[in-house]
Length: 322
Image 1 (cartoon, rainbow, N blue to C red):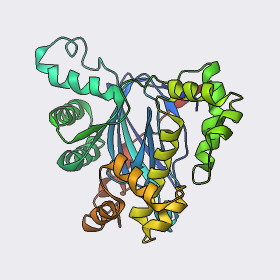
Image 2 (cartoon, helix red, strand yellow):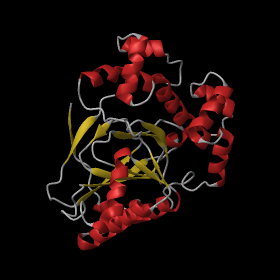
Image 3 (cartoon, rainbow, N blue to C red):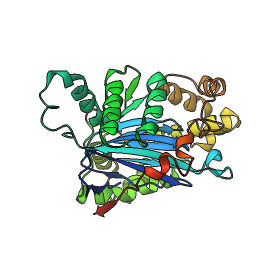
């Protein structure tokens, strides 16, 4: 899976860029760029890839990513995305590290913001009260201009820097995949896995696609992707299972098999290992806290009004180099 470099166009030299994306379902585009990005999912659900992290996303998802960290948000054609009128909508704010000039790297008063930006090298996903507050602040940011926009953005950074309810997504030893012979070899492997992970995807089959022996392929995959082949496939399957648990009433045993696990006990063990909770409790949490699951845009009116914040957003311009 070879990431594509996206050159962020900024002809007006604005200190930050705000982009809106609105499509029926986001497509897999593994890419990176040389700026920070704060991403809010307004509506929609699917699978989030950040570095070597694979996880489920939903409306309200807030993630901060550092420069050169490969990422993509991908719709999976689940029940929620197939509902009539379903749409994926996201707001992304991009900014350079020195958007405040020379003071940020050295001024003691910005220490907590520097720490936040350092965490962003791994991708930071925010939850709880922070997630709700940032959603409101980001939607408001799109309506502002001039000094008011700067002050509002500094307020967002301060809130994120002070937050305790966050998770780091990518592992410490993950190295971004840059173009080269290694990425050309693994591109076909990851394309195959992403298309067939709900089926019986074997280590031997993947090694054959890479034209390698199984032992050499194991080392190659771990070095390139930052995790083992088995962990990569398991995380894809668990992300698929999480989506089914949230969006359907399908029996858990059936979800296990539909997600590619060959028996229920293995599924339960892997789910608990990765999510620190069992599938039944995971589903119950969403049933008890249905915010944004049934009508994810109901509280996000600024972006649903054509004469409000949406009219101020500009599409992202990315030119790709291979």
